[in-house]
Length: 401
Image 1 (cartoon, rainbow, N blue to C red):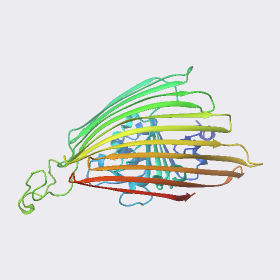
Image 2: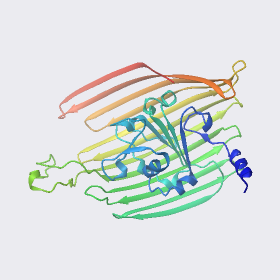
Image 3: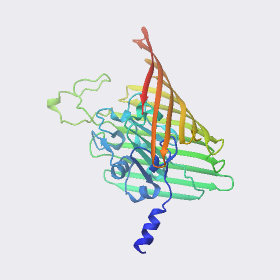
Image 4: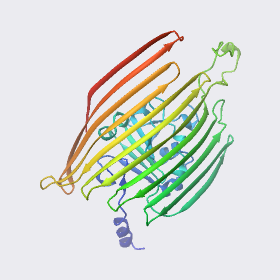
């Protein structure tokens, strides 16, 4: 191949459309740094977990207190402690961010199930809210092509680390239907006490393209069972559940508390639909439900239910003689936490608008605003005798782009 033909081939590469922008824009049209990791790049990365992939291919930082990848906390834009709460992570319509302020468990997303990964660096708060002030990561399992294929792989490593993944895809170009099913399993003993983990995950879904303008509907479901140790502080004295650890000066300094573990059971479903009225106007609706049961240290247990609704309208009709790109819509989120002692309820709603005008073919100006409102209520029972409740609400928070 000559240098001329190589440059010509490079100049005719297919356009990369980024879905994490909520606008489905080409990568070159997004005013922030974007990383897109394709299926081929995932396979060639030799990464063994989602955390490993984001470190190797996207140069993202993770705060790690131990070698357990289930406890790794993502950090972008220099955020410190709890910075993971400023990165919105979406997998097949499900938001991995937790309302109880615990970090996202990226290990429950097997690499073999992913078709592409999109990372938007920088604030995306106008379109995604306050939990996207550092960026957005979108993980997608369903493929847009109609090819049928099956992938199976296993991994073996030190400290009794084993993994297995099975992924299947099928499609029918005549009907526009595609379907996928994914299974993942991974376990490890870790290199220290309570450094073990075991994770099962199942995902599946169907998607149908309705026309050539981008109209579609999709339905997906997910399940994950995660168990992992919590290596940490040295236990001393007598714990409330009757275990006597003795004096720290008379025992090895190891975090070998047999009760230091966690169990998270997550399941739910998501549905999405988009309708293109013409070449310039379209609307989309997305619904998702997730339930998570968390148990740790054999004494702390609670359930969290999340319901999320996203609605947006897009218009690309010219404004006068200028090319125009407008997106407006709203989000609603319901969080329910029940621990037997605390009964927490939170509703949050938001409206947003983002406008971009093209002064020239390669020059545009854009801006946006987002207003949020939320209401919380917390009912607490102490010693099964005293009840008290706390209610609050706030409104008028505006983020400008």
